[in-house]
View (cartoon, rainbow, N blue to C red):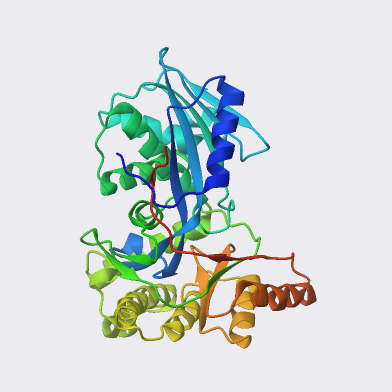
Amino acid sequence: MTGELSTGPARVAANAKSRFVDIVGAQPEGLWAAPGRVNLIGEHTDYNAGLALPFAIDRATVIAARRRTDGLVRIHSTTLDGQATAALRDLSAWAPATFAPWARYPLGVVWCMARSGTEVPGLDLVISSDVPLGSGLSSSGALTVGVAVAVADLSGSQLSHVEAAKIAQSAESSFAGAPTGLLDQLASLEGRAGSAVLIDFSSMETELVTITAGPLVVVNTRVERANAGGAYADRRRTCEMAAAKLGVPTLRQAELARVETELDGDLRKRARHIVTENGRVRETAERLHEGRPVGELLVSSHISLRDDYEVSCPQLDLAVETALARGAEGARLTGAGLGGCAISLGVDASDLETVVSKAFEEAGFEQPEVFAVTPADGAGRLE
């Protein structure tokens, strides 16, 4: 898998290259980058065969890599505790539980590629990233996608974006214990500067949608979310139960009238969010095409995630409320929720940082991180 990024995370790439030389004692054969993502709208719809509208961001994971001749796969992370290392010699018989949780992501990718028929050589991989960990900006997706594109190039494998996304997803779900849909991986692969990616998870078709509105600002609440935790899996099971009760393959085929009349309790609430969220995604894409405001749809999405899907938290609610009070066109939690980040539209980062920091201090919360994001190019080779 090849491709050149028109813009690149230069500082992270320089760090990855420098650390590779320090650790391995040789120059890497290449550098590969995979960005994190912000989901503009369309939350928890991916595993319900629905619609989502994410965009790749100008923060990324960079993989510096070089082939080895002894069959050993050795992975170094410069992100966790300064440096962490994991090594695997026999791809046919590895046990994920014997490795640190972070190592299961990249090693899982390598194992999945080998299992799918790719002749994976021995490798040295050094990982560097500026995607905040556990924030809901898909640091894990950037990691697994970055490893997939690097290994594909070095092994001469021709992977489509969908194939690479599925390998990255499988590594997260099967080996890292983090059940995910395909949103994070496809956003990281399909992203283009200045655009969001409209993804139909039923057909796996994608369409670029230009984002002209802005500025786009992220508020990282610093409430870490555990994607492998029970809440995500519970929401997923509930959606499957709701679809089964309605007699449809997935909630993509569900009708709101039937959801309201034939379901109750949590089944109704979770299904109502999915059905209405798909409608909001479709309308957001249409409005962006036409140059019309989309802020109210973001707010409606947050309310639905807060009340029907119940994946918000006090810090996320405060970030959204403060942004709207400051004059944001729209704001919502982004990512799986239960911590992580909110995205706002229409207020400068410096202005928003002032008011959100004050609101968090008054509420007794840890100080948030506030920064602007720009829709960026997707994963590919840097050099």
